[in-house]
Length: 203
Image 1 (cartoon, rainbow, N blue to C red):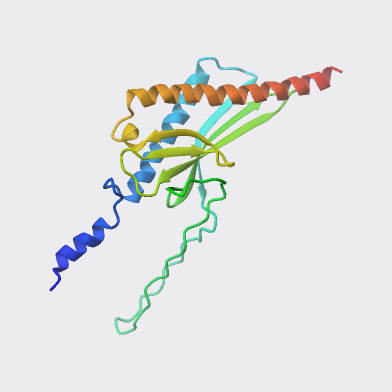
Image 2 (image 1 turned 30 degrees about the vertical axis):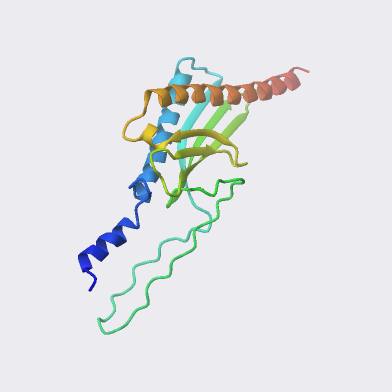
């Protein structure tokens, strides 16, 4: 005869990844990585602030495609009224190309690093970059948390055990380099826009 407590423990273990994490924990590891990169970008830009160009680096949260709003509470049913088990909605399909089959978006919301540069008049322009978080479906310590562009380009990866429980020294160095690269690329694009606008103004 099956032991109820043993069966319940087995069911609970099915909710864990091969590294012993819940999906919610894996999502939080990814959120931690995004927040740290956002902070690094802000600190980097603060070293050379400009009155002509402003930076907004943040973590954006948006509802996943095909996600349905929560249903309002239902009136309590009589104990005698049988009810069917709730239907399980299929997972949403990420609108990002070339997503590795081993990875998924966070369960509840899309998380992305949003980098926006804005220049002032008379050459008012905007450069925006988004890097979307994908986490391993069956995470262990040696699996990668990934940032992908909307086109599916893998721009940054960090192992779970580099993020949790604390950021490793090597990862911190790589984060600094990544922040310099994406800020430099965005500023290069901004320079082209401002130069074009100012040239047109002076002709």
